[in-house]
Image 1 (cartoon, rainbow, N blue to C red):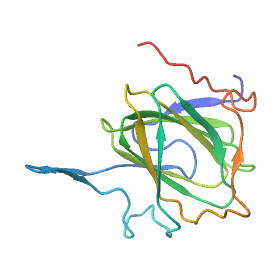
Image 2 (image 1 turned 135 degrees about the vertical axis):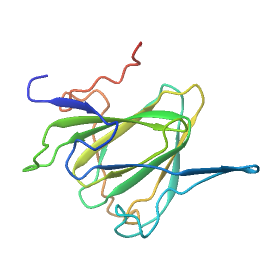
Image 3 (image 1 turned 90 degrees about the vertical axis):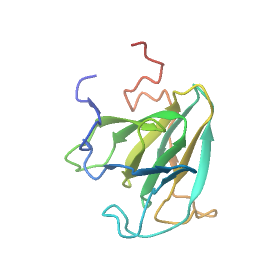
Image 4 (image 1 turned 180 degrees about the vertical axis):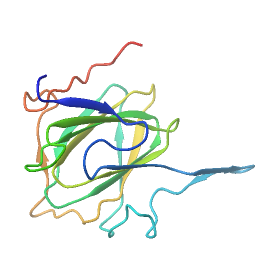
Length: 164
């Protein structure tokens, strides 16, 4: 659509404030260890909570945005196509769409600042698992959550599976 750009992240992020960092996987004879987020990482600001969410193959979880909270997402099982949309007034990347393919075959930590809508679809054949380490705890009485349906006309994005 006119006025909207789509970028696929393979290195540097395209949306201002979104940071994508490869995760280090350390294998040995017993299995593997993967650090997701450390307090001495450049992307770390503060700790709010840690939670796990799962997504069934082909399912879409979108669109979701926070006004105060920063998310730190890492897929620990399965593969995902994460889509991000910059809805921030005055942002140098306003209306930019960005995709990140993350999961067991491409371990990434994605830092999503407030004001950036995000969602994902599980593109693996098995249920996928995402860990989120937001910088604020969930406020059950006043949730910092703003949602749009996956097919909203406000975000020009197609969630359908793509053939190679």
